[in-house]
Length: 392
Ligand SMILES: Cc1ncc(COP(=O)(O)O)c(C=O)c1O
Image 1 (tube, rainbow, N blue to C red):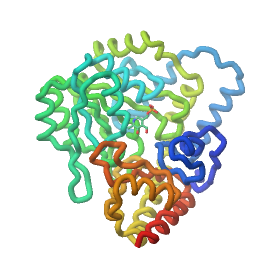
Image 2: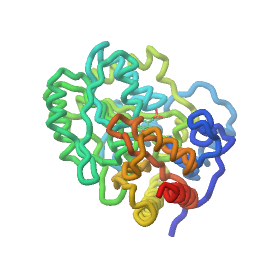
Image 3: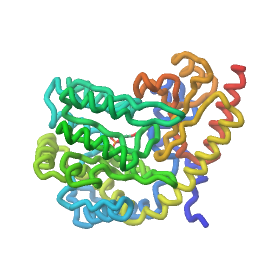
Image 4: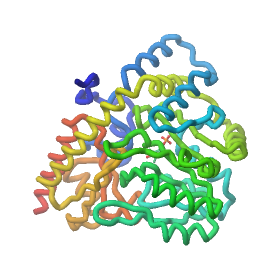
């Protein structure tokens, strides 16, 4: 028995939604079916809406402090969902994970310092490093037999070159890997032995498919915790990105003090009143909703895979272990990058993310967001299949 209706189609046009109302600006066409940016076409859990409504009805939205219950909700969430004991003192804040990444790079490196990333990867990882005059060091993932792995030999060589930070995407957007304990330990050992700070972006960490388990990097050992900063948020999990509230977990006292001072110096430490209410309600009451969401997303994934295998055999789905973003290999269509982009927009009438935005390794791939009602996904796949037929 399911309690939540993920089949409900909630119109989003006209709500200033980046995904729906930003199409004209981003894709030059307002009428595409959008399966791009990482938010969901589902309402946040009713328990969260209820607490937000109650707070809105109070009517005053002045400056806000974070109550004990807020910290407690975060601690309980990570304990019950991820078996990670987060101390209250470790929890700091930011208006978003990307702003936090920018601040971390700025604070813990000097211009010219090296920062490692693992492409194909979430595109702001490139810009937060390069826009601040730091040197980007790329440790590309290896694509083998339809799945991605880390290249540890290359990582060891690059770590040797004096990098200060590694930005880890865990789970990995866009390839959908949920890193195993062994993989994280190998990565952590390499970073620790070269005194590299591991900045682990775990924003997708609650969105894990059956058979896989999210291991917070910092939960593996005290040594790893001490040389890490973990960026988390309820924004992907519960569709709250617009409320701009996330937690930056920094177990080491000195590292945390440095981060916190930088945050305060930029006036970025304040709380978003509604974001704070939503975070607490989601972490306190959202577990059952999330469990049902993952069942629905698993079914969407199976639907997508069946549809692609039977109707679009020249495409290949990279089976995600977590996240609602699906990485699809379009190289079988034999189209050049520009032509492929145009084909998806003009012929399939879809807004997807082109793979090359995640690094050159993503050329010929597309990222599709399946966090939508099945009827929307079905429509998108029909449009794609019909467009591909015209190529044959
Ligand atoms: C890996 C990753 N990190 C961070 C973000 C964005 O985080 P925020 O909206 O909190 O800046 C996203 C959104 O797609 C993401 O995929």
